[in-house]
Image (tube, rainbow, N blue to C red):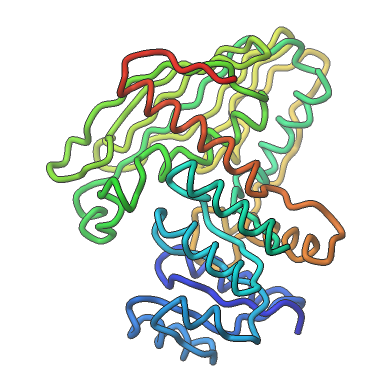
Length: 340
């Protein structure tokens, strides 16, 4: 039956993983764990598998080859470290960690135990992003002059009541980590290494929410490209947009949609707009099989056979976390943060 998975954390995002694992011929879900035993037992019953209350007990199961981590942000590294030490490969939802020290510890532990580590960064796999990456790599836009990422979403009081760990600094890590991490990852993947960051953030408008509600940053890349990031979860009533604008010497491209999966503007010298297929079951849907999560799993399974490298390994995932921490440091100190 292929690689046998144990899934840790049976909350909202877990259904994407369960659906994908069940859809793949060379993967099998054999167990789940959650601190809410009633929820774990419900998911286990639905899938005819074993339920655990503690992840420590799940990773002791000798039948399991790899774990999928779908728990609150701050718990990813400690669970991944324990799993690697128990002889399991690790696939974790973003972020790799909320602190750089814990990210490095997870990377080191997986390496020392000869276990693969993959971090879910599925937005890179959207067809529109893939086309943009291709045209940049081919030099069709010429020098990239500037870029802008705008993430303007709504996270109201009901959201924080339903998922209370999201409003806490120690378990969530910050709005940048929870909401904008994918988009910072894509920006850096497209434009390369960062030279410096200067930023400001503001508190959330909902009393008691410890993470920031909005922020802006100027990111200078070593290539000379200047990028701006505007993000908020304080938009009235509903999500407004998630967009990426790239301005090059020879063209302008703007991506939008739910996860950079639509091309809103494509004006490139000598290059027609590509006819991309917007895949159904988009990455923010928990219904059906997410095509982008499916690609992540297919890559992970091939990497376990040493056929391909992991799309986003620990070191690659840590790069965007470094930028996020630089933004927070700049906002806290009021100073520009420079990278080596």
